[in-house]
Length: 441
Image (cartoon, rainbow, N blue to C red; front, side, top):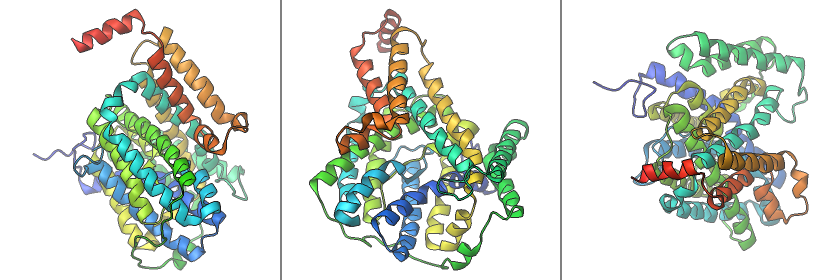
């Protein structure tokens, strides 16, 4: 009998269940997936008609790379419900490279950087010992905490919105959040597991009555387009490549955290060596594929990790179903335009809860062992310095630009780096030594 459970990794639920569950993954990541190319393109002067085409390529590659992570090609892919999209982490370095060398320089550096991350993935089994649950827990918790402001900014209307923080936006986001909570806690079956999709639909209806949806974008969109590789050329510059390689290290750290969040939140276990290696390989080679289609690097999306943690839905088929909407939407611009008209405050209403659930997955990883002594020091210093730096970026203003790109921003890399170093140099407590000896035995 076919496994129909959406809670099982290999479960294949009926389409009437898989479609709404897959769509809520796409709704959660859609705007964030497209925003980086819009931001970078606007700053470095990519013509609007080219940006429109690159948006379709972005949807296509996000869908393809998600399918690779979910279903694996040889050793490439985690074989986990990991959703992939364009990473915001690369935006600052892409802008600085683009202003100096043009978009071709960005793509050339991204291609080499992707190969570098894939190389790291080949050796993940050997360096896995540097990422025990206390370290991956810090990374996952840092990701969740650093994303909370993103959720609130969306709930308030989205950065740059003329009515940012208005009562109407707060009301709309609040309605979505309340609906998600009600359906998640009191509904049953598909209505509970698809609570985010239900909340989003309710939000869209309310937004329509409030006059917050503009369908002119849908009317202007073409009916059909074919994403093509190498719309832009590739140029290679050493300083750009080095900066991009550092950002791919950031991407690898976030992917480790996201995969740990998926397995811990959805299956209550740690990620395996094979999943970790395959996931990093796919993350790096996915960046190479993205550069080939003239878009910014892709990586795992933390908001979708939050969906897995909140719903417990681990089915790769569900994520694959959502990915197919991205692939099909890449050929039919009107589909993407329909999703793009959803107000940011509607998306933000669910993101606040999703990002908080990521943080809870990190807490679950951290507290697998007693949080005292050595473990307490690792968590305290990692979060204190890393999360603190992420909230006070001016503390790093005198560092070289490349290091500011690496250590600034969210502070995830700082937290992860400190956690790895302290885990190596601090002596184990007697209880930990006994536990490790028992595991080896």
